[in-house]
Amino acid sequence: MGKLFLVATPIGNLEDISARALRILRESACIAAEDTRQTGKLLSHYEIRTPMLAYHEHNKLTRIGAILEKLAASDVALVSDAGTPGLNDPGYELVRAALAAGFEVSPVPGPSAPIVALTASGLPTDAFLYLGYLPRTTGQRKALLADFVRERRTLIALEAPHRLLDSLADVRAALGEREIVVARELTKIHEEFVRGKSADVLAHFRAHPPLGEITLVIGGAVEMPKWSEPEVRAAIRREAKSGLSAGELAGNIAEQSGWNKRDVYKLIHT
Image (cartoon, rainbow, N blue to C red; front, side, top):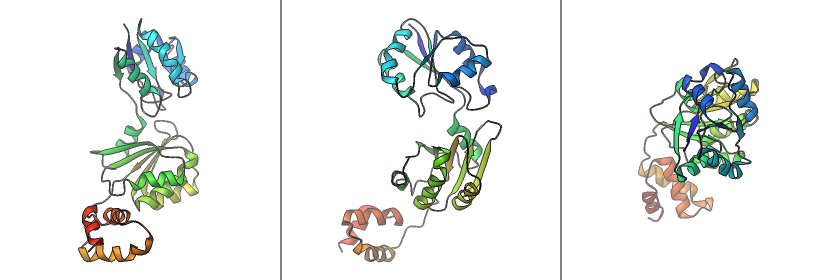
């Protein structure tokens, strides 16, 4: 019975692969690759001739059975197009299926864009929250970000270059002025870190249209002083004509004021 190895591969610089990862790629009977062309470049560079099998978002459900059959006889290495497999790629489903079938799953650690960006960002690293790729539309992005208005942990997200300006604008609108780091083309020749307040980073990329792979690191919320009761009552009076239900009104004010929603709700009815 074989083992499924989750092999992290370089996110840019080919020298960032580990000696163990190279050995596993050579010794496995098959490499399940998210992008066989991209992985082929890596294998060619290190003269590795292990057969590849395409395993990606569009064929993941039909390929799992074939990969499990190979695991029944020998080891299989899973790789994404770059970085650590299982994050923002179809590796999760294969890992679940392999475990359910009784196979051992073993990680071969290495590069991961979210962690690389975080550690070099200069923002707090003791606690963080990974959001994956931000939603594609403004409405969906703002709805997601609204859940983290009071989040104290550093936020990490991935974004495509053609959506970066809109996303930065939505981050500023939803979260206010925050410390932001845009990490671009990590470990590659044109690696760049742009650090600053939301408005400054947005202005930079309006003047210099972004290219390449991008990771966003967003500073957590600064603790705000809790509102006094008169301030909460004043907010209730201001928002009373908004048409929101009492529960919605209480939730909105609680989010801004630091009060418990239940306590705001009581004030609405007194």
